Image (cartoon, rainbow, N blue to C red; front, side, top):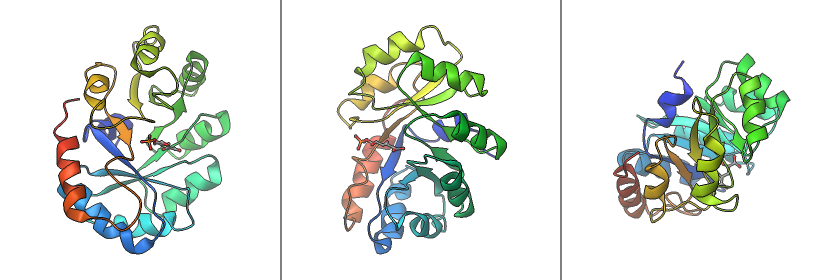
Length: 204
Ligand SMILES: O=C(O)C(=O)C[C@H](O)[C@H](O)COP(=O)(O)O
């Protein structure tokens, strides 16, 4: 089983994907992987999400994850669909314990020192700083990360090609998450592959 640090170091950007039509899933995944972004987070925000994950998993090179996982049932559904990592908007003891029990790479959302401490209590050290820009941006993450040298982060929420470099220049940031590389709707695969290449070329 790949660990969460390996997932986070696979590419500088983890696409955050919302699928509303399963016909879009495979072309989108193929374009993102061709552009160098292999870890793909499909949010469980739509009824099509789990079917999309199963289809995208068939794309050579794709490493599938589920986002917006908020409880153990959704975590188990995501694992059954073939996910290799789990992402959540926040961190509850119940969800954290379920992720540890299933031994799955888990990237829980945190926005405060107390969230981090709750994660440390569960044996977690890698976190999604979310909502990154709204929660204070890079100054907030740097201040919050200072007491927790053992922790590493994936900021997500309001991050784009323009501001990603400053986040990735912080040594405690291993990657960033963003929906900018995976716009909703029918994928313009050439455009998406080009955006993925730009994102993959960022330095973590
Ligand atoms: O619910 C989750 O688990 C998430 O994954 C939250 C998403 O990462 C952000 O909503 C993406 O924010 P934008 O890149 O600004 O669109």
